[in-house]
Length: 552
Ligand code: ARE
Ligand code: CA
Image 1 (cartoon, protein in one colour):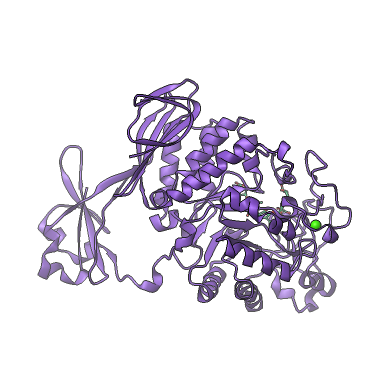
Image 2: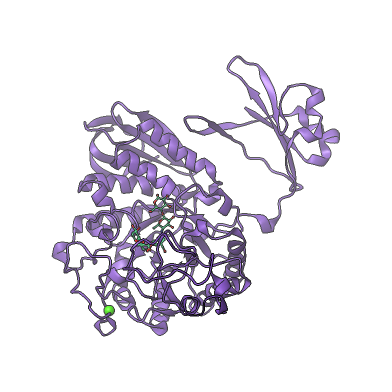
C-alpha cells in the first residue's frame, strides 16, 4: 500500500500524482489491517489518495469517490483525492505532557482513611467493622485522612490523585450533589482542601476531581424548589420534566422508580437529570468548573456519565477550563467507543473501559481467544489518534466494578501479570485504592470496603510489587507512551504472548505466559522486570502467570 499526496493547489504544476510513498502495516484486527505513513504538508493542506496492490499484483487507485484504475486521467482529477483542507493550530488535539508522566491513584473518600473523627456522620460505623459494606453505611473517611497518608502515597510512587466526588451530598458516594460549591462537611472544608492540594503539588502529585453534571441530588435546593412549587418554580427549566406536578416520592434509597415524569440518571429518583441546554444551567456549571480551578488550582476534572450530557455544553466546558489552565486534563467517563468526544474540543481522554474490558475477558474471564484479544486491543487503539491513546486512563477496576483480585479469583500472580500487562500499554495507569495491599471486593458496594491500614493485615509483598511496577512505568514512560506497539508472537496453543514497545531510541519487550504450562523462550536484551521466571544462559523459563520484561 502506498500514498499519493501533495498540496491541493499544486496537482498540475508539481505533478505529484506521479510519486508514491510507501506505507507500513501497523496493527491488524480480525477484519482490518491498518497502514501508516508520516508526511509533511508545508502549506498545512493535504490532498491524498492510495495505491492499493492486491495479492495478485494488480493495483488500483483508492479515493474519496471509490476505486479507479491506476491511470493518468483519474490521478489528475483533483476532486478524487481525500482532503485535509487546512490544519489550524486551534483545532490541534492538545495532550498535556504531565498526564503521560502520571500514575493515578483513585480514592473513594468515605473509605480511604478517617483522619478526623469530629466530622464523622451520625451513625458512623467502626472502620472496617463489616466484611462487606452496606449501601447506606458511613465509616467516616475524609480529606484529613488523605492528607495524613501522603507519605504512604509518595512511598508507593503514585503522582496523581483521582477523587470520587467530594462536594456536599447526601449519600456515602456523593454522586447526588446538594451543593457543588461546598466540600461535604463529613470530608472537611475548603481550607483543608486547599492545604491538601498545596501539599500534593509540593510533592509533584496532581489532583483530579469528579464532576457530576449529568444530574444533581434530589435534596439540592433547586430540585426541592421544583417539588414544592411545580410549574411556578424558578428552576422548572433546569430539569427535563414531562408534566407538573412531578411524580416524586423519596423512595427507599436506590430503589428504582419507573413511573417518574422527569428524567433521571438511570432510574433513580435521587438523581434528577439537569437540562444542560438551559443557559442558566450552563452558566451554573461553568462557574463551578472554573471556581475549583481558579481558587484551588485543581489539575483535572473527571466527568461523570459524560456521554449522557450534550456536546454543546462540553465544548464550552473545555474552553472555560483551558482558558484558565492550558494543560488542564478533562477525562470523560464513557464505557464505549468515544470518538465524538475526543476531537480536541471536548475531552482529553476517557476512562478506557473498552480497552481494559478485553484484558478482563482474556486474562480473567477466559471468554475470548488470544487472537481475539489482540484484535480487540488493536481495534481500540486504532479508533483514536496516538496523542489521544497516550492520554487514556487505563484501569481494570474502579468504585463501579469488582476489584481485580476478586476478578482473578484470589490469584495474586495472575493479578500481578495483568497489572504488568496493563502498565506496558499506551495510556495512563490508574490504581484503585487498596489494590496495592491485596484488597478484594465484588460489585459495588463490596468494592468500597474501608482501606486496610494495619500493616499485619496488608499484603506487603503486593505493595512492593506495585511500588516497583509504578517506578518501572515512570522510568520508562517515554517509551511506553510514545513507542509503537508490535505483536511479535501470538501463540494460542501455549498461551505465549510477546510484544514490543519501541521508539527509535529504545525497545521494551514483554513476554507473557498466559497458559497453564511453563514456557521457554530465548532472551534477547537485558532483563528489567521478572515475575515467576528463571533465566539461564539466555534461556527463559516462565511459569504460568509469569512474565519477563526485557530492554533491547
Ligand atoms: C447503585 C447500584 C446500582 C443500582 C443503583 C440503583 O450500584 O446497581 O442500580 O444504585 O439506583 C452512583 C453510585 C452507585 C449508584 C448510582 C445510582 O456510585 O453506587 O448505583 O449512583 O444511585 C453506567 C453509566 C456510568 C455510571 C455507571 C454506574 O454509563 O456513567 O452506570 N457511572 C457513574 C459513576 C457511579 C455513579 C454514577 C455514574 C451516578 O461512576 O459511581 O453511581 O452518578 C456497562 C455499561 C455502562 C454502565 C456500566 C456499569 O458496561 O456499558 O454504561 O455504566 O455497565 O453499570
Ligand atoms: Ca471523619
